[in-house]
Length: 231
Image (cartoon, rainbow, N blue to C red; front, side, top):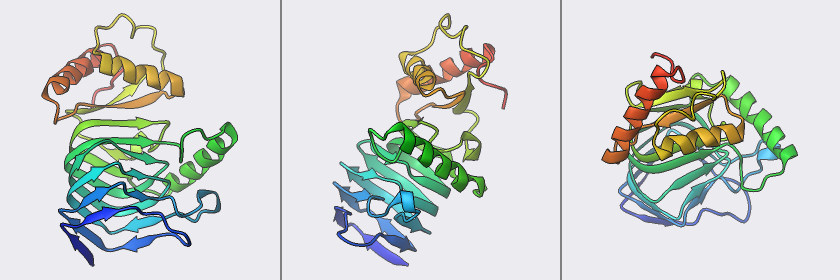
């Protein structure tokens, strides 16, 4: 096990080669302007990878993760600003306890053209076909969490049915406009429509008491209207 305790870790770009990290444990570290997942080439199936890692009690500032592969790893006690994972693949990754703000984006970088989006989408589908489960967020405490552009198949995510909800608009959204929902949930559904997604994930953020209550109320309304199926 490679360990790092109470260190400040910066950067992540390499001139040559890619990262293949296994058996990493970081406790009490700060990641400043850090990047991971940008040294390989996803088009050639040569991606940075992290396996069997434990990252806990960490602070992140100005960091991002690219199209890396993360397997059998655990993240807990993560504080700081929004972390965006661009086209990252997950295989049996657990997030529990505090994780302030996390966005999983289904494209490897902004501005990707439509042809490359289709190529990447096929690679993503092929990857998750052999994954038993991708993410366990059932015990995570977010300030904000969202998934964009089908970053991870929802059926491969382990959820807390009391606070994390699959919104299904496959039957159409004709009745949504008449529902009294929070602006957060309305924005989430609008994003689903933009992405042409039939299912989306609505997570009540346990670290934002006011929004947490609003999302639970929204979930009750959506469930009564048939957009959230009984657990």
